[in-house]
Length: 304
Image 1 (cartoon, rainbow, N blue to C red):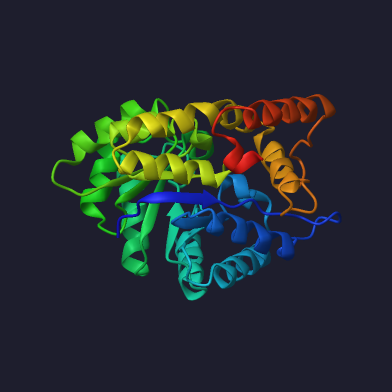
Image 2: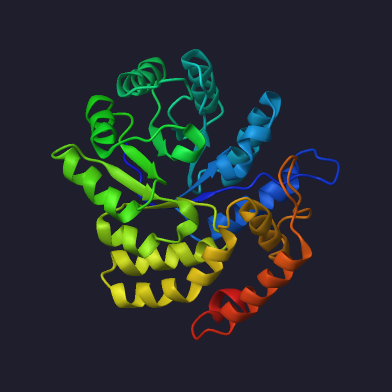
């Protein structure tokens, strides 16, 4: 299966004491689904999956699948260093009702292309579920060349959707599509949506990211697919400053959760340690960029 459109990567909200806040999670799901997304992604990197316990993974997945209730596709992060562990996570995701899983290459010393291809083949052979290949070297520790991604798509039919987060993403998109030849491949951009328009122009099938205003991503994608590139660009460039600000390395997830708090869906914007909390200077800067964005012509439809 190839995925296209807009997929919103969900944050994992926590209560003041650190437990998962399921009510806030349900509200986030309702907000992004109402925004018109084609799917949601739970337990992604920006969903703080590395700080979610094994017993909590199933709880998050169950909650998201139940709240979406068939209104959109549900993709669940299932990356793991060991093949058996990864298979178990994929199998669990399928059992709990996920439509697909997102998997990065396993972290390993001297990982090579053959090992990566074998990893995805093993997953596909073990569980009949579509796989989104996540290409995000800062997390996986492994850079996948366009030829390797094309090879995975060719040799593992279940893994023909790529979440591309290895910039320059428009350039790499074109290289992957050229290397894929007759093999159908769907590429979804990420990175906070900051290159969405340029990625679409290069041939991506959409975007999978956690930008806290998914309505913007949906509007840009819809206008672009309708052939109105100028209108898509007009919307996109008005919101790029906010996308850029939200996607700051190290503090971006804290900013995103604060925006969701201001949107009334997350009660507590805190992250689990050792992630940093939002400092007052960044909070004030966020308020300024939100106010500036709301004053742009045509932006009132979302920011008021």
